[in-house]
Image (cartoon, rainbow, N blue to C red; front, side):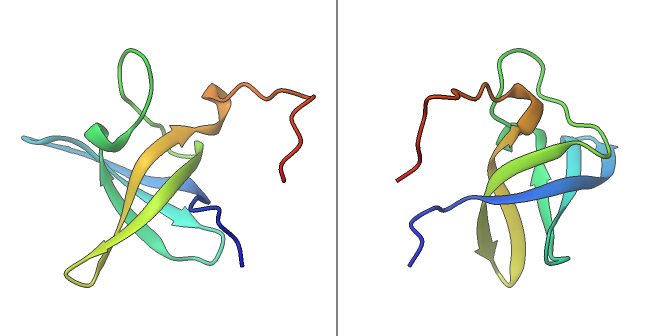
Length: 85
């Protein structure tokens, strides 16, 4: 059994309203997850673009899927010496 809580996906929609930016992220199984800019983990301005690849933790509330703790994959620095166990 995997202990990795993360899913990977791509930003497919972006909207702007009085609450700020909102996004739809589609995972590799075609499920769509809603999120707001406050769910993005980054330094500086929190913004995603359509086509960005992301990692996130899925959540469900009232039957709706949400993406939380979102990290844009281009923001992650990989250590070649790191071995996942």
